[in-house]
Image (cartoon, rainbow, N blue to C red):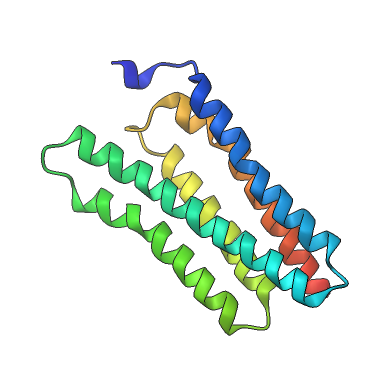
Length: 154
């Protein structure tokens, strides 16, 4: 079956690689603006929103695989696939409700890490996809951790 080839196709490799860029840019802006609280808050919000978008996207991948493979998709796969969207949305709402944005950014990093483990443990996702996910996930988590640390020190 083509879905289970070993070599990573170029398009997903390029897109996942470029997908790390906003994480790094927004974390860099938090660092750059660490002495400008309003700008720092904006960069933290952008990082939170992008994390929510990526969590939603990752859930959509799982949803798509499930409905492509089965005439009757399983609740046990569909329900967890929407959790990233809900967690991401909750993170954005939480960002506006707290004075501790470092917790929001750390929570988003944790959600991305959990989604990574959820994906790599799935035998239904292509091997190349599961293997490819490590570097974008580490880049995202490192960016969120930097942002959280900077907010914690502010």
